[in-house]
Image (cartoon, rainbow, N blue to C red; front, side):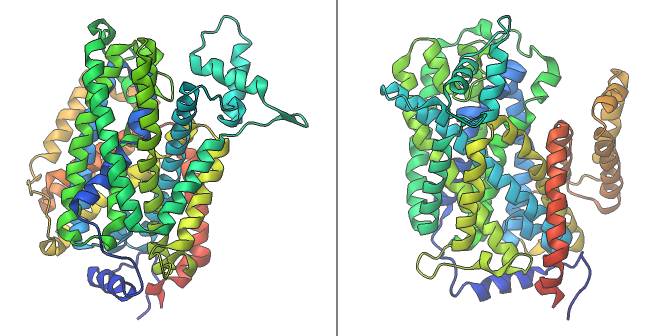
Length: 550
């Protein structure tokens, strides 16, 4: 029977049956908990720890380590919700599929469309970061790659204009960018600058992902071991060069400075949801997916906090606005040998993050196509390699082309809005399934802590604190989205009292929503434009071609 509502939902049995029906000529089940944990670590410890951590530290100083703790806690709440869903709906699609069974098709489409943006943008950042380290590695070996082929036009042009002001203070990266602009060849009146290594590595990794999961798994496991060895080496060696005076002031730009790094810090953690896109290639997804998500988050949170404290202790935080902070800090203390090891290792290790994201995105396309919301070719499985072939090729071009021309800061700011939205709906979906009594079939269940008499009192305490400190109304002026945050908290307090909601999913919603309010207008503007494009595609194609409509 067809359903014409945009809120039509798939039953869990329907999702599982559809996955089973498509599996005969589909994906191969070869992944265990170690492989999944490895994929999670590969995605989380990528450009975040080798690159964007420097930008976050520049904004907030040493106190950014506390922001990593806060964000990791928010992610753990969310990961528990993901884990419960993964144990109930062990199919590819991640939050897209979870939203389909809990909130309906329109929300599933929005989440799927947002995840496409998240994965693509995340990989653009990773590719650009890889390029920075690759060029640095070549320079260490005495090979000077043409600078105008390693940077985007916008960054170089901006740095060149800034260099004309002799009073302005410039970092080493600013000087490099300005010189790249000067050296660039000219076509007409336009300087030709592209980040060639970023585009090339994206296509090479896409080729590996296209060939098969077994090859991708072997490469990921090897690269993750190498990555962890390098990070532990940085922490243990760098600790001897920490100067405690660099930690003072601990939060030089106050709370706002720390929270200003939310986009960069949160970007570092979003990789854990990529594990759930491989559900149909797991040997025992109901058991292994939940374990892998928790394992990789805990490991990565500890490493991120340690790395942040070491970096901000080795050099002053004001020097960390660079795209290769781990190598940079050792160069500053004239430990060039260590900087060289990091540069070489980072080139190899960041590749693993690129691999996982390039592996995850085609499977989102595939899941949406299988439901009829995207064109059938996106769900085509290669007869020999057993991978979503067409979707993988499209993903390669979608990531490679923008990474040639746009800067990292733009992408970091862009990646978080859709991810927060997806995380909030996954946490809300668990509450919905609990309310409907469907969670009883879950192989993994979030520990139940009755929030009936907790959510409301916490709201009252939080409101009293902000009003008493005279920051409630001032914060509303600078961050109007806080109105939504307080209203949602009030609504959850009522619902928790009425339905005895578990506190952990509620905390997941609130922490993600609060972090969402810290994002800038640019993030929201581009996300809304992307969302509008997605809704046009849905109503022109997906709505009438949805399998639930037939």
